[in-house]
Image 1 (spheres, rainbow, N blue to C red):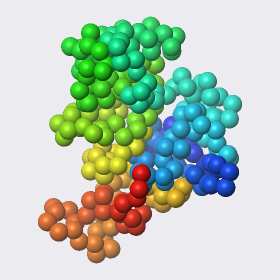
Image 2 (cartoon, one colour; image 1 turned 30 degrees about the vertical axis):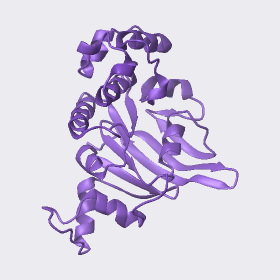
Image 3 (cartoon, one colour; image 1 turned 90 degrees about the vertical axis):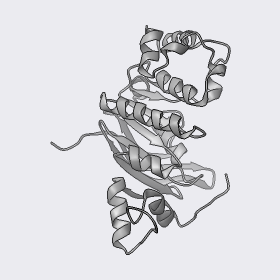
Image 4 (cartoon, one colour; image 1 turned 135 degrees about the horizontal axis):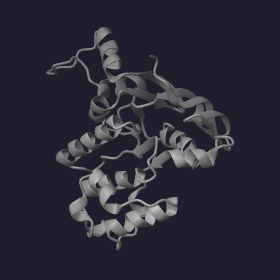
Amino acid sequence: MAKQPIITVKNLVKKYDDFTAVNDISFEVYEGEIFGLLGPNGAGKTTTLEIIETLREKTSGEITVDGYSIDNDTDAIKKRIGVQLQAAGYYPNLNLSELIDLFSGLYGIDKSPKEMLEKVALTEKAKAKYKDLSGGQKQRFSIATTLINDPRIIFLDEPTTGLDPQARRNLWDLIRDIRDKGTTVVITTHYMDEAEVLCDRVAFIDGGHVIGIDTPDNFIDKLVATGFDRKKEVKSANLEDVFINLTGKEWRPE
């Protein structure tokens, strides 16, 4: 049975005066996958996601999310997605149970803080204040808040930035578990090893364009087939090599 797209983006354009941030982007995200949106800073990833999340207006193009058009069904889309907030979105002096209650109220639904904290292994921190959590705990809690409205899709923007390797691997397990329980995950990351391990498929974006969509393994195998040879690696290339090969620039200013 063919996989069904849960997000469809067709010919998406976003212009700011004379600057085109997103230039005719098209892709699909399949239901039940972890889909990675990868690219250098300023490539158009965040703008694309914010348009899909109904947080930013598009200039032109078509977007459907779980069967609803972004042109006239934004309320329906908002009910079906979970968007990870940045740290500034939390009241630092409220404890985690109080924050879950607050967000539940904003969604107009009744969710048990204990139930939500269990999902991200934070039940022992129910009475802890957000500001007192470790980096990994803060990220797990932010993911819990994306799940409050039982979304069909969650969007995670660089969820492991700044985490130590152990916390990062724990978060990988959590993201896989969310996917395995039926929620589609769209993720951005600058860590190519993370995308390689987590993502079922990835799209590379550069200069406002999609420059490639495939599984990490297929991307790597295609690069190896060109004769690329990476020294002292079990595999001759990794996804980071694909990233550099496609975008042609190892570093860009923030």
